[in-house]
Image 1 (tube, rainbow, N blue to C red):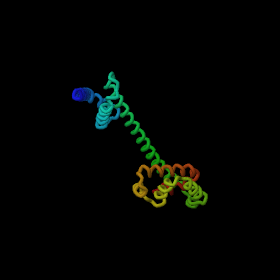
Image 2: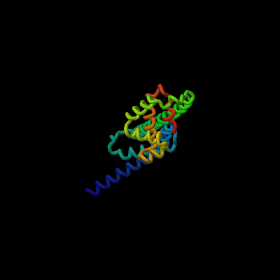
Image 3: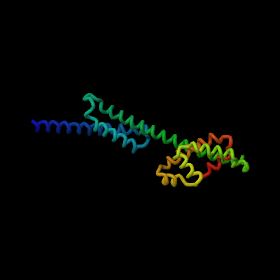
Image 4: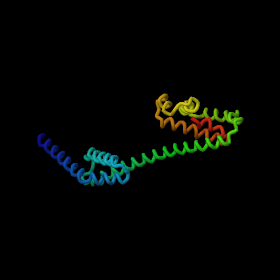
Length: 197
């Protein structure tokens, strides 16, 4: 009896494998083309398709027997494409913000240098605003900003010293500059000191 059960299970598994192979042969290229239409990278489209077939294989026993398997796999592909595109969108926004900050910084350097009055540059009032602003920063942000602007360390050096990523360094510096920019809007000539580095 046990032997018959083993044979039946073995035949069911062979049948599953044959079905999967037929499915893979018949739909793989179509699914890759579908994914590539959205992700626009053939290697990523192929990876997404392969991962989706594997997800089906691992979950096949939990699906109802009347499931539309190609539609199920295509739904997985759709969701993986969406995740990929949303991840890329976030990366693009972050890169765009960094580029925007770099452009803003350059404009401020030009404007403040043109309007610079050296006698007012280190006035007590401006120094107080800067010190008060820096004292409100979180400890890690202040540490990163100090290493960058007062100790002239590169993002890479700071990342290594604090055991964080260069993106983390950029995040903390952007955060500090944002706050300083807001508080020093009436003293733009002073900002050039902090933006140079």
